[in-house]
Image 1 (cartoon, rainbow, N blue to C red):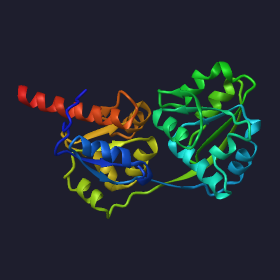
Image 2 (image 1 turned 135 degrees about the vertical axis):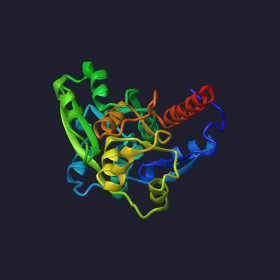
Image 3 (image 1 turned 90 degrees about the vertical axis):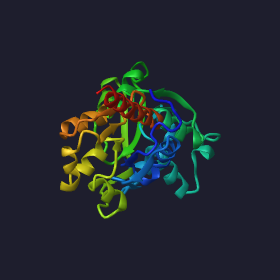
Image 4 (image 1 turned 90 degrees about the horizontal axis):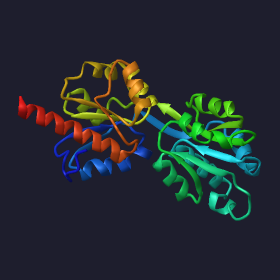
Length: 273
């Protein structure tokens, strides 16, 4: 992978992450010499119906495991606890908390930041992979899965097949919307950007549901589409906009490394031609 400090010098990269999630990506792009342009395709909000979440967090002792597949789920639970003057750190000394498993190092960091001890971290960036890795511990286990209102049923189903009793609750809501009047959108539509980075299938669908976003399918070859992992890349393929870049490591640094490597190979090809 490319590792020069300024290996993306002069590149203009559109970030589709929600504003609450874009800081680390923006920092890494700038560190590598690129100009990040923020065009959120998803907006994160508190869950509209927090009754199930409140009931689950109020009876944590009844669960053997709590599984977080994203930083947002961790934050959503912590914010809900904070509304009643509680926090994970406050609960830990006084209550038997379930074991914690997460997807990815970013989610692990978010969990640890609020005082949770993570027992297992999956590197696969897939909820189903987490279920497979914990399969031996699932028979008879009671599992809490806080998640987005847009999350599909694959993880709960995989856990259930392994013998777990699953309680899936909405920890936060995801709104799909793009501000096409923003400066980042105008730069993208005018062809004055070099790449766009996607971190979830929902982000892909949100952008392409508008004819302006769908126009990216006819992008010039020098404009690169980057995906955080195989699931997001599969959504891009299904949407008729295949990824040019798929991160080998499902992280911000892994994606930026892959993007830099793609541009490096392009420069080398031009030199050989």
